[in-house]
Length: 183
Image 1 (cartoon, rainbow, N blue to C red):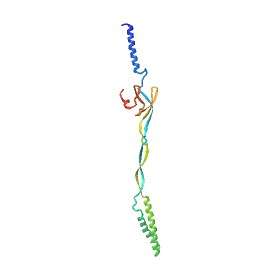
Image 2 (image 1 turned 30 degrees about the vertical axis):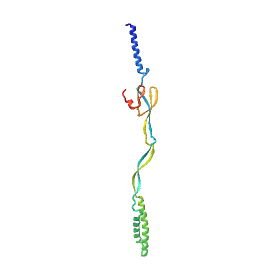
Image 3 (image 1 turned 90 degrees about the horizontal axis):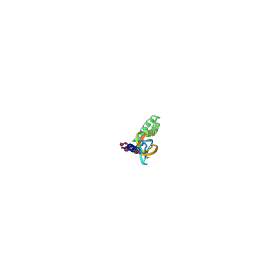
Image 4 (image 1 turned 180 degrees about the vertical axis):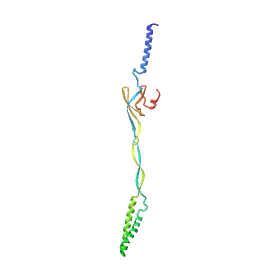
């Protein structure tokens, strides 16, 4: 074999090796393994559904009234007023004072019992519910702004990618299954 033939063979092998290496890196450039994440915005949907929002509230309720007409207060007041009235005056004036004392005492006893019944309350806890529209949000995904080489773009992903997105064969790996698969 001549020197020219050996030199041609060596140059041919070098040419094939160089073209194979260039095609492996795609038109002579370097392909990045990750795209840089520039911004992430959560995307939520409320579905426009109505739902009930409930909370526990403490309220005062009137106590149970056993004597609605205040008869006990009226009777006790009348007896007390009559006894006090009978202590005043003498003769027929004493009887008149006892009757007047009974009437005034009965009225006063009635009003005292009425006031005491109105103040008799007990604290109870109740559930108060209000309708709310769209108060519950469901996460739909994440709008992600990224930079891949010189290109800046937006993509929607099913998860927050963090600081970077894996790239394989020039394509973003957008789901967790794709990004965690072996290269």
